Length: 450
Image 1 (tube, rainbow, N blue to C red):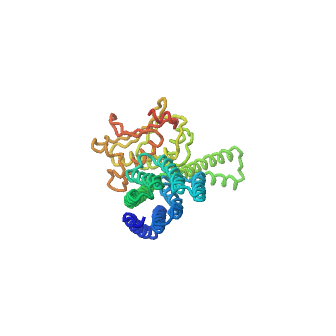
Image 2: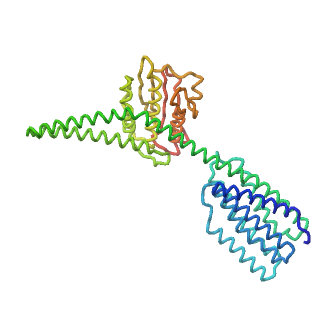
Image 3: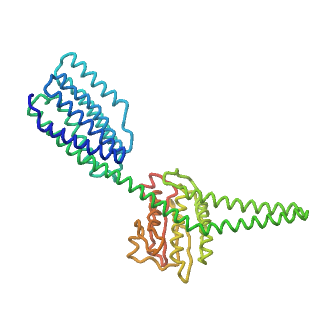
């Protein structure tokens, strides 16, 4: 073939432009996804440049550009890996590609037709990339698989599918022009889709980081609200310890060492110290909890009592009656620090709602069911207006004039739903009532039936 297809020239210009753009973006941002995109365009640029240089040579030389398909496969695999978030490389990928080139080399030695030089590479590349597409797609959650991902996977599929016809139509002038035209279209499509996917993924990552930051902010805001109450909770046992220690010192100075008296005082000091240790340990666990923590089987009584130790004093200082019904001693599979966070949030919301009312009380009660336990927080408030009920669980919605992030209930609902439960407002109650229903076991069977 003596003439150079116009589509090949346009493809080279398109790829050169994308290399320049990707280089500028990568060297300014240094993101791994940008580096993968740059590598993809470099592999394509190298392939089409070699194709142009070998355009009018013998079949053995014309087959040389297929060597660069290995680089292209590697670049495509890295792109799909970055999108799916998993390593897609398998040892058999390398064996398949290497075997294909061995077959091609043997075909050249035996002076077989052109198709034997190139089809093994084309077929091996097709199998490897299809494996990456299939496994990569399975790793992306359905709700995160956007139109950008669909277009990217479709573009990659077109590229590797078109490579299969290369061995058969390369020496047909009409099909060669059509083939380079298809390549040009796929390059233009990739030039649009690849940056879109990259931007989409980066935006999702930034959004997740922002949500995590805001959740931590809301969580530590709750910790800040607990500070005064905890200070009093710690101050009282410290006072007891100091009082008992002074009594013991007085008895020692007077040589009045009654064994029973000393043991009683030491027992009280030990019990009080254990209470302080429990408060500190629970607070440390609360501040470090995460949705990635393993599930534990814990008594509901322990979770509730630990939570109440954070806020009981705060209610007492503001003369708000905190009524706690008998706490069920049931074993529940959960992340206890997260459940504690939910209960604390509900109690703090009730505190804020009634602190300025004439009648001030908050009630914590429980309903035991066959598969679930319902934690009920009721306060003396008159209820939540119907217009607000629909929005109250939405992120950033708040009715507080100051210090309200609007994240408390949405975070609480997220935690409960992660535990296959539900958080809802009880519209049938005369007072403001929020219920958190949790299964005893985090089983798939229960999750699907709930």
